[in-house]
Image 1 (cartoon, rainbow, N blue to C red):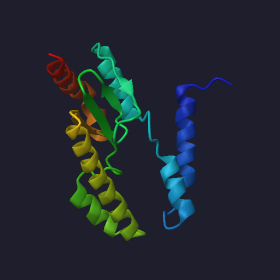
Image 2 (tube, one colour):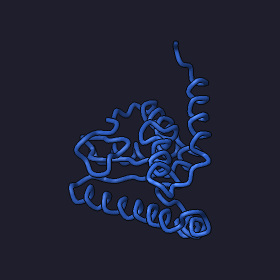
Image 3 (tube, rainbow, N blue to C red):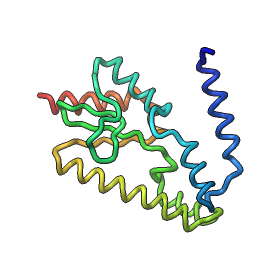
Image 4 (cartoon, rainbow, N blue to C red):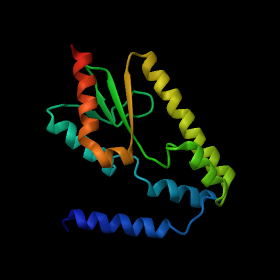
Length: 162
């Protein structure tokens, strides 16, 4: 059976609905919560990659051997791009932590999100130490202005190539 984009949307909604009632207070629930979140080829990543490709930029996706598994890699320019999910990577961290503290299993979630933010900073530092320029964009910003973000990336890539 050939899948259409609407099939994929329905399938992902079904998957999300099955996990919606779970609370990550057990190993099984934590595993289900993480499994339901895409790690690669998220909608913001795809939208941004299309905007980059439309500008004539060529890149690698999920290139192995680099810290942090960047979403887009411009090897010759030594530029990496991360499309960070608002929840998992701690957008508006203080407000996010305040909200998490009021929720179920608060210590787990506060530690998880703050740990992700700290890991992102370590990744940025490791990449910079190896001569890479690191660009991080929030999923919400990509959804709102993928073209503007693609323009920023293009300027940096072209600058580093010349």
